[in-house]
Length: 265
Image 1 (tube, rainbow, N blue to C red):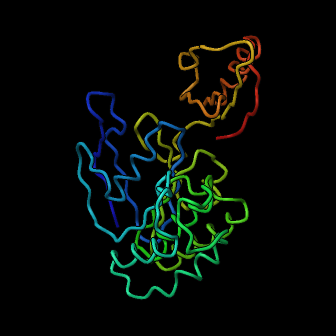
Image 2 (cartoon, one colour):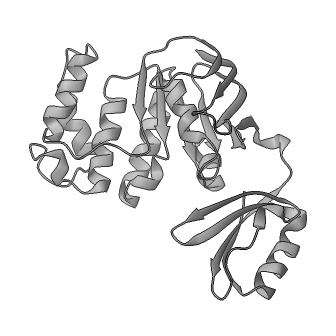
């Protein structure tokens, strides 16, 4: 369906965000990409969706694509219904009768004729999901889709992913939670330091969430076994080889950190 060959992306003179990505999306497959914040997940999806060009490498295949970005631009004067009609017409979709049933299925809270900017972030995300799936694309690309939706809509999203695969189309989605990726994907990849590889090629890992209590500024990236470090809402998220997890936890506790969670990757 679509293939990236040796694709890389660099912004300005900084370090490469993606480096020599070889990645194939076959038809009728759901692919989950696991990675922490800053690992390049969104950049990779933008390239797959055709909204960003790689700095080098080749892309083979041009499937009709539906794309839900990680941050849906909901601050618009158009209503949800008008926005979906507008994008459907741009995409060449003549039958607009599926818009209202889809919004109802996603349990949109509020008037579909209300301006998008008046909707909550979660409901704007539902409109974004609707515009991605409405034209029944050959390739559906979803950036962290579960994280922006209310729990009641999670099962609907799972159904939409399964239905897309059942009609022979493909889905590529990202998430930072291993359990979510494994639950919904046929194939799982990890994106790390700008490079992608099948998950099974990695040693067993742990995701350790720390909260600085009496300590901050530690150079966790220099700790043996630590593969990535990211900040989320004041917490520090470490991806650590399982065999080094106990040593990292011991250092954190002795250094005045609070351990919020230890989870498998």
